[in-house]
Length: 86
View (tube, rainbow, N blue to C red):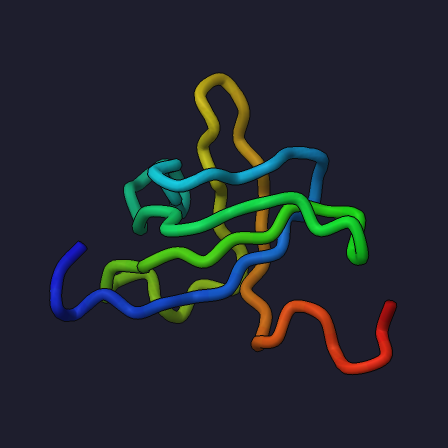
């Protein structure tokens, strides 16, 4: 990542668990990297924090690449789980 990268919070739209180091892409182009990811038992989906490069910081939907799988993910505002949600 670079000093211009911005932290984003991502929620997976399909089954899959993002992990540290997974590549983030937008339209097949590198958009950033996952810094932390896990499965949320409360939300019943994968969630991640990722640094996004400047050209892709305004994208609302990106792909998290986990080896042979591409997981569509949408940007969300923190916190992932709202008070009294679970």
